[in-house]
Structure formats: C-alpha cells, structure tokens
Length: 224
Ligand code: NI
Image (cartoon, rainbow, N blue to C red):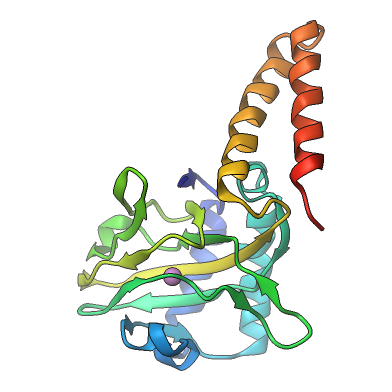
C-alpha cells in the first residue's frame, strides 16, 4: 500500500531546506549505492557536512516522525537519517528494491518502509515521478513540496528520468514495529475507523470493541 501524506513540512521549513540545499555540495549518488543499485542509479546526493545534515535532519525528520499519519502508516521502531537527493535533467534511478538492511555496524536496522519527502514543487521539473510497482500495477507519485509518500521497502520502484529542471527529495527508511506490509495496512485501515469512531461516538459499545480489537491486534503483531 502506498500512502501519501500532505504537508509534512510547512512553507517556512520548505523555504529553509531549499535555500540550504541551493548552496550545498552534492556528490555522485552511486557512491552510496550497493552493487545492483549502482548499475541503475544516476543522481546526486548531498555531500557529508555534519552541521548542515544536522540542521536539515532536525527540520525534515523532526517533522516526519511527529506526523500522526506517518506514525499510523509506518508504525516506526527506528527511523534512519535521510539521504538528500538531487536529480537534474537526464538523471534517473532505474528499477530496484532498497537494501534490506542499512546503517553502520552496531546501528543496523531492517528496512520495512521507504519514505520520500518531496522538497520542491512538481512544476519545478518535468518527469521525475516515483513509480512504485503494486498489486494494482505501477503507481506514479509526484507530490507538492513538503508532502511525503510511504510504501513498503520490498516494492520494486524507480524514479523516471527528469527531462527538465531539478527534482529535490529526502529519502529515508524505517524499521517498523509490524514487519509484514499486509498487517501494517490492516492496522492502518482499522486505526482510521477507530479514530473516526472515537471522535464521533466515543461512548458507544462498538467504538470500545473496535478500539480494544485494534490495540490488541497491534500488540499481537508488534515486534520490538
Ligand atoms: Ni529506492
């Protein structure tokens, strides 16, 4: 399941991030790619600069991990520091699945959920859609600046070639408390019904039953 989350970053934060990235150094994205990805990856990534990364991560990740919809969709146990990627005209990232385990020794995490946060407007570039293969065929995603998409890391996906302008994104990975994407999807849907019932009919018996069932299913399926 693919979940889009609007307005993870507000206008002020987006302006700050865009300005910071405009003057930053980027390096060849294949430097951080595994063997299979190297063959299909053609983009640039923000060069290591601890101070800048820290500033950006505080803004981008700080907003993402506090977002209620992200929490409900990803059920995060660990969220990695993101990569900031830039695609200019002619750049692309061919079909691949993300690495199963990431992070330095001692801080490794399993990648269950992939997240892309769009950092500039769709009008700023042509092409550059994130295309994710799903059970219902390929889904194309190109969102407003500040919005994010969340999808299972096991999905085959690619970034279509940018044919004009520049595409800026932050990408990150989450180890979820619920490893199975089908179970996460059920919990997400059930939680939507539960939250709506808790608002509309907080005192109903059915509301309590749904709440108890959700909480106990989450407990049954979560691994920490
Ligand atoms: Ni990927």
